[in-house]
Amino acid sequence: DSGVTQTPKHLITATGQRVTLRCSPRSGDLSVYWYQQSLDQGLQFLIQYYNGEERAKGNILERFSAQQFPDLHSELNLSSLELGDSALYFCASSRSPPPDTQYFGPGTRLTVL
Amino acid sequence: GENVEQHPSTLSVQEGDSAVIKCTYSDSASNYFPWYKQELGKRPQLIIDIRSNVGEKKDQRIAVTLNKTAKHFSLHITETQPEDSAVYFCAASRLVPGTASKLTFGTGTRLQVTL
Image 1 (tube, each protein chain N blue to C red):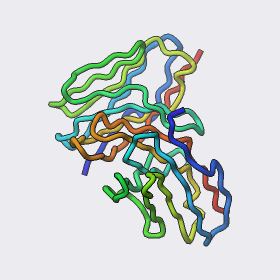
Image 2 (cartoon, each protein chain N blue to C red):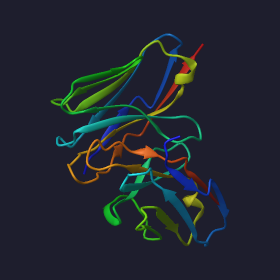
Image 3 (cartoon, rainbow over the protein chains, first blue to last red):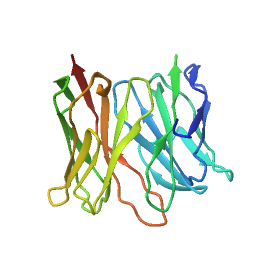
Image 4 (spheres, rainbow over the protein chains, first blue to last red):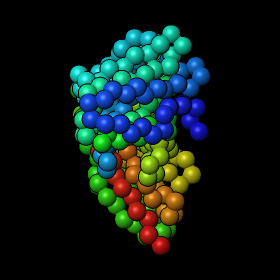
């Protein structure tokens, strides 16, 4: 158990819908990262937050957005869902300053039908 | 931005043999190189990491080597066991004190340890 929690574990929804994925970082970690992993694919970095502020953006679609709240938990919002959005979504957290090891949560499996 | 290439994409070894996975990176300022193991349907788990001020690091059957000049690093697993079967990801990052940083991952190596 890495100490990072994600809810829900599984999510099944229909195309065109909107969902919210939630992540709670490890105690003391200020940074949260979101990754997307499609079937048999690598980890695609989506976005990073540090102490409430967006720090880096990766391959995140305009239909996706995220935020980090004052209590440091983070939410990833996915809207106008398409079949191709079906994937495992991982959240990771890290402590700053270095060492900056990222610890991953268990992931949310999103299935869009 | 950083680009990380990983080889091979699949690797099959017999139990007890060694396995080596190699990665190259493009950003010469990268200074942190972790390796993650991911079992099917599970989260990536950190197995070992190395920073650029060190050339080699070992932890039991696992070792990582770093060649900063050539910008490549490798994972070595000795005396492989069936439970080592998983997908392994390398990653690279530039750590700046006081800030967080993002990891750039390789595309993964599926390791299969056969009996």
